[in-house]
Length: 209
Image (spheres, rainbow, N blue to C red):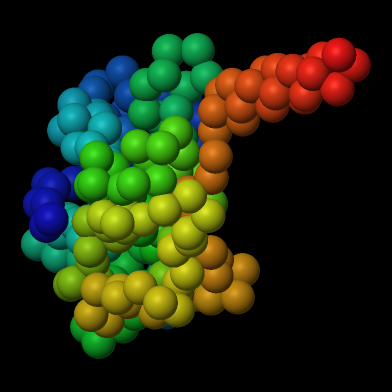
């Protein structure tokens, strides 16, 4: 997803000036990276709040129109007010042509209803919720899907066995070697125990007769 924002240069820093901007409906921010000087900006709070509430915001390349200058950036950090929850600051990292960026791609499962292990009472244990990867900023995948079709209890999704989107390279393949596994749920396990105990008691009773 590519988004365009009209932003303004801000010449002054400090808490007083930041507070003044917020009263006017703007959020102070900074653009950095690509071996260039940091650039202080302000951006519409209403517009920023609307977009940053989406799950894909941090994986989106943004175009900032700063006066007569254009910057392509990735959102890196948003600071929220601890009481009101309003956005009070934002950091953007410049994206240059041909560069690779490090981001976290959400990992999700699909086709739970087609997994025999789930039907038998198993549950999906998602080990890696977001996979840290190097990617081309113009081809950032929205998510990585793990297909549960045919999966049984005890089966796992190993990073080196799944097909990642083109151009995606894991940052820590050894740390994130197991993405998910299907395990037996605590409920299923507890339901089996009384049955096992009952069978044992029955055997003991028969033997005493």
